[in-house]
Image (cartoon, rainbow, N blue to C red; front, side):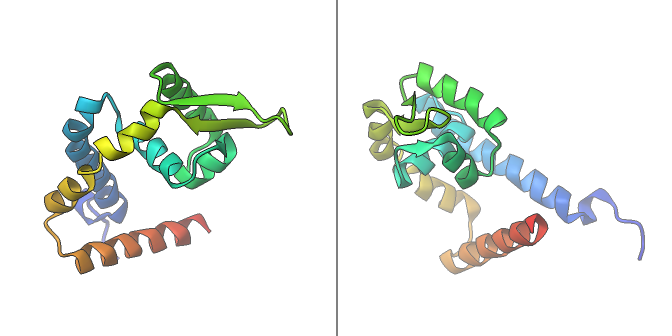
Length: 141
């Protein structure tokens, strides 16, 4: 097998696509004062509010040492609240604030903008997502 060049590498294709996707998100999220990682946290909490930091980390694929500073910033912005679990003091629970909940409706059009920017049919985008997710799972497992 010949030596791979940067454009030949799947890791670089995924890395550069990730950066391109975040560049598309940035101007869409800026009016709400959100970063892409903050938006992902909100999406996870919109799916299931009142989660432990550990549960949230598993949903997002983030370690607590990465997630905790992000959650602290979001709490300071008034998007969520963190509190010790009443049943297990070792656990920290994360819940959406009214502002965090309201952003769900305010950001509802972002998904359509991302879909349009991708320029793929629904079936193609779904298949691509499924392939990338399967690759991630194989690499993780």
